[in-house]
Amino acid sequence: MDHFLYRDGALHAEDVAISEIAAAVGTPFYVYSTATLTRHFKLFEEALSPLPHLVCFAMKSNANLAVIRTLAGLGAGMDVVSIGEYLKAKAAGVPGERIVFSGVGKTRADMRTALEGGIRQFNVESEPELLALNEVAVSLGLRAPITIRVNPDVDAKTHEKIATGKKENKFGIPISRARAVYAEAAALKGIEVVGIDVHIGSQLVDLEPFEQAYLKVAELTKLLRADGHDIRRLDLGGGLGIPYERSNAAPPLPLDYGAVIKRTVGDLGCEIEIEPGRLISGNAGLLVSEVIYVKSGEEREFLIVDAAMNDLVRPSMYGAHHDIVPVIEPAPGTETQPYDIVGPVCETGDTFAKQRPLPPLKAGDLIAFRSAGAYGAAMASEYNMRPLIPEVLVNGDQFAVIRARPTYDEMINRDTLPSWL
Ligand code: LLP
Image: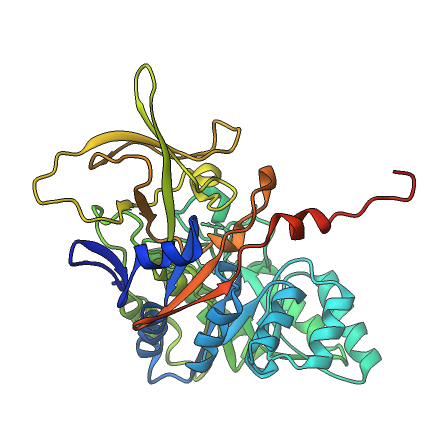
């Protein structure tokens, strides 16, 4: 459920008309709903209660400072995958003890910054990383709290580019090697083992792979405890999928996911961490765009809109579906017609949807891409010298620009000329 509904014939974000925001900031733009972010975060809180737990928002899905601060204010921790995300989480007011640091390529400089600034745990992904972290921690006279990310070799049954838990993926250490690597970790002076980490992929719409992976983690917990390790925390990753197509069957809810967690690892006495991104931010955001031209091709009608693949890359990168709706509610009984919805970028791949049924639209009309709050703005680029588009946060009847559109001068002046030119 989200808070983007038609009211009096016009699409609203909570109590604010989308057209009002468009008039104030210009199109295209992203708009996020505080009520939806809050609702989704609380669903996970409820799903994990009464187990001791921390819900760490995967910042990679939406790293806007205001979004992070909103969630941090609700008690969220953060899952970061770069030192940039770490510094932004700190800037948003998240204390180090609520930040977990994931990712296969942490550098020594990253490790130093996080150790000095405070960190809940590093999710270590390889033996070389473990040794590097030990060296850095020892040099600082500290012990780095760690989990080791295990790769459970489970098929997440999702898009191949976002599946991470198969043995051919680059993530984690094979679960079969876990005991040996934990023994190695326990012998390192700069390392403090606190738990186990697993993450098998993103946009999972079936709970079965989670169940399989978490059962393997439960088994490993018992083995590692028998080996003498103090396994007191389990980081179970993110990945619960969202309904991108409202016409499809709804994916499982956080409550169902919580039941899997309780059933598989709930009686181990561990603190549970999860790292959801998409389910919290995805349906909390829209991308709003204006139709520039309606162009009749030989075989199809194109809606050329002012958003493009650089603003929302998911359709061209993963063939992802986003529901698209007109901002003015069509009158009941309006006939739809098929459109190809494309952006202005000079690539055929700059196509958001093909033969999508929509009510008749004309130049100047506004449309909204749903489910765009996760991996939307976060993956945007300035390809074709197109400015990163504004982000707006709505809260009840208020809205604020939480990232302004840069001017062309600002963009041009970021480049510098060498002395010989
Ligand atoms: N934890 C780790 C270690 C991850 O790698 C990810 C996502 C998450 C948590 C959060 O997963 P979520 O709950 O958001 O599914 N750009 C792609 C998605 C990439 C996901 C990468 N890892 C997309 O637009 O679909």
